[in-house]
Image 1: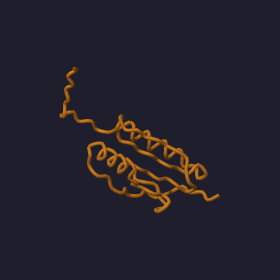
Image 2 (image 1 turned 90 degrees about the horizontal axis):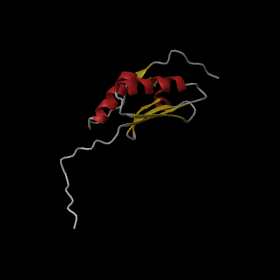
Image 3 (image 1 turned 90 degrees about the vertical axis):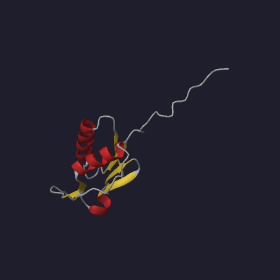
Image 4 (image 1 turned 120 degrees about the horizontal axis):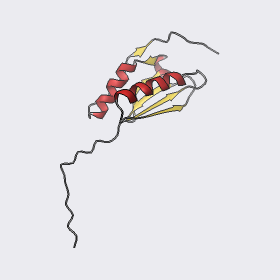
Amino acid sequence: MENIVKNENINVTPQTRVEIEYCNICNSKPQCLELATIIRERIPDAEVVCRSGRRGSFEVQINDTLVHSKLSSLAFPDYEQVVENVRNAKEGRPVQTVAQQPITECVVQ
């Protein structure tokens, strides 16, 4: 019979996942890529996914928790607060809704 040794002291932290849904029609992909780059630079092991989604969207989810909705707020998130929330999630702390930054360049088509 084989002996199996279990080490119960191993701490496996699941990878922190950030999903950003952006509106391709509104051309918010550059903002998505900018936020993704900032997160990856500061928290390299975070998984960040940008995906095209609903019209007018810029929705940010961290581990399936919505922390920002442009559909609700009509504004982009404060990037620093998003990074802080990603760091909190990575460390096992709760994430919170982030503040908004005003939209300064908006073109309605």
